[in-house]
Amino acid sequence: MPSKTAKSKELYERALKVMIEGGSSPSRGPANYGDYPLFIQRAKGSRIFDLDGNEYIDWMMAYGALPLGHAHPSIVAAVEEAVRTGAHFAAATEVEVEVAEILQKIIPSAERVCFANTGTEAAMAAIRLARGYTGKPKFIKFEGHYHGWYDDFLVNAHPHLTTSLGYRNDPIKIAESSGLNRHSLEDTIVVPWNDLRAVERVIETHRGQIAAIITEGVMANMGIILPEPGYLWGLFELAHKNGILFILDETVTGFRVAPGGCQEYFGIKPDLSTFGKAMGCGFPVAAFAGRQEIMEALAWGGVLHHGTQNASRAGLFAARASLLELTRNEGQVFAGLWSLAGKLCAGLRRLFQESGVEAVVQNLGPMLQILFTGQPAIRDYREFCASVDRKKYQRFALALFDEGIYMSPSAALHSVVTTAHSEEDVGITLEAVGKVLKNGKF
Ligand code: PMP
Image (cartoon, rainbow, N blue to C red; front, side, top):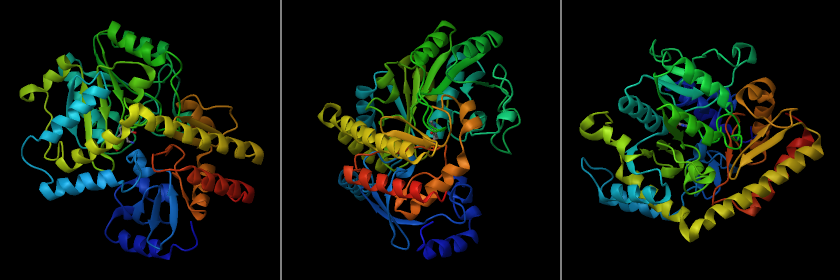
């Protein structure tokens, strides 16, 4: 923790009197931040400033919700216009149609689009839609994948002791929360990722019962773990051969690895996909989209999707401005992001190698994570659980706060390169990492 954070400490003590762990999500509480979190007061571009006036280069970017960085002028102007002319109505709006049209253009699988507020809601709606459309109760979810905090998803989504995971062929379901609906996990089938044989096996066991396979395109909630070549295609084919819908959760990867997300990058066409985070540029806007025939099950509330805040006008003004920025000059923006992320990752790898501290840096374009491990790579959830030193990573990330670098203190959450970051930011970050590695106090 930086030495001059007295005001954050004071505010945390005040917050504890009105909120649990001083905030609204355990990710922002002592589990990740130790004694007290930094209270961030304002931000601009790649920088955030805490209550005490300390400045940090922000590599978390609101958990990936800010592809253009903080307070981008186009977003500020768009949102100002929206709130001046009415933040939200009990009515359909033109901007809703416009954003849906943009999505349809950049995401070929998005034949029809429906807006929600958060990634959790979009994924929950997609599962309900899959169940409603197919008339089947179960779905397949992968170990280590996180799709939000809906009861049916909250299983094997966080790292656990390897001794509690069970045998690969029959993973033990580990609920991530108390208070879940007692029956919610009955229909959730958990399978190791990057293993097509495992999926074939459970399809056989639950024949005729499975509505959907839901997957992240890149495992992004366990560091960054890539799919084996051909794996996503294999999943898609297995699903279709067996009358199962293929749902791609692009909450993290959408508008991040390419304008059209993982489906563009890996060349796949899911039946349904879900989006959130980067879409709203810091505003709670999400969407699920997919084949017209499936989406039509929403008509007349056949499969119900309600929400006072759905398609928030202010949020969609932000989304429209952001999508226009991101798709300018035929994807040049993404070439810049990948190039800058490449420099950051290469620099980090060099520093770790020189320091002798055992770690790997895994990334897909602008999504990256440092994993403290003696392994040459982390290829799946079980390897992550078995060999990533999460406590050491946390100490390292908190030591970086002292140097003005704000990376996630959770080993499972990745860092994000945005259009607001510069070569200078990369240089300052590498210098800080070098210093922390040299001090060795983590
Ligand atoms: N899906 C994935 C892949 C995610 O990473 C997340 C959030 N980290 C969600 C869904 C849930 O999104 P939200 O936090 O907006 O509900």
